[in-house]
Image: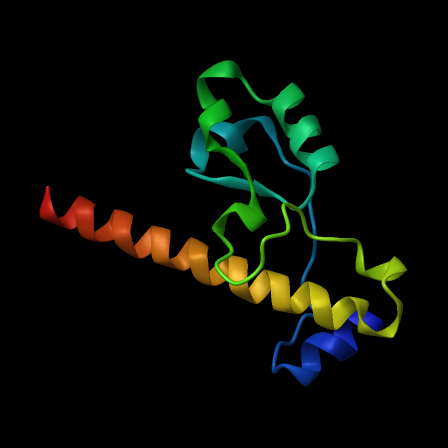
Length: 110
């Protein structure tokens, strides 16, 4: 409930959001597969076929304001943990959107 409350304060409605396991077809189907931390990135690398390893990255690689390499687990960050994680996610997702826009522009120009 702390995640829902923190997200709602920022205008995000996440009560219907569901997680799922990465499936074998995802490595072929998606251009990027982003991990929040080293442990998940390592698990993805072990599961991913070698030709698709270039698609695996840490989400925080796209952050512009924060230099942290990974997104911390907010459950252990005290009352401000979820707010801090949202700061990281907003920053990194903005960077992902910039990459997608750039790739879309390059694709249209080709």
